[in-house]
Length: 216
Image (tube, rainbow, N blue to C red; front, side, top):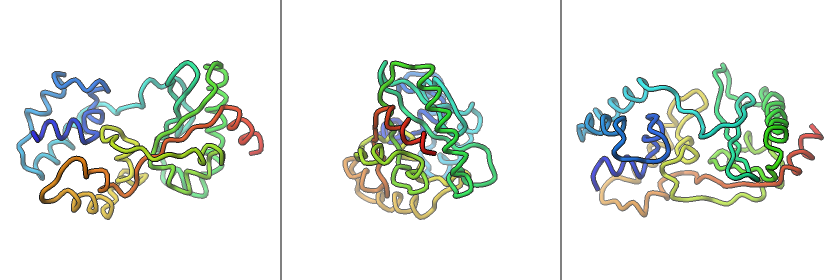
């Protein structure tokens, strides 16, 4: 498989480099990046980091509203997706001391959803974080019970985020597990089993969230 195809189809790099979500192989910003690859893992990793650092931060797609670490975008007229991103703080946004702040932010996000998009009746999420107790405790039990694993989302951050800590540092043990998995003779169909956690898709009615946060 050509290196350019592997990076396009089996990593999150296209989006991280600010090339959008249409995955246009002819996009100038992407073509410029591909031309700089040297087919040397260490040099290409350093080069990719340098390109990423030179480009603006990438926001979640089509954000309608934001409240602290959380934001939402519309999937359809009647459903919205919740996004999570760490803020620039000195502690993990999911540590015990931050729970109350995250709950207030979710209450604020819910108020925005109801006010700005009153036709929305269902809230959805997709992330590896729904495996994580510190994240799960922020959400209604019914929302969490709906969780279903989603595979083959190699282009999306809900899969790759599990290799980074809240401060952006690498989770070396998880990264090593994936790296060892793809050594030697390898086929893309086996890639999913190299990830310690698969992203979970979750959903629940807006009314479930309203009842849950009303008790907070």
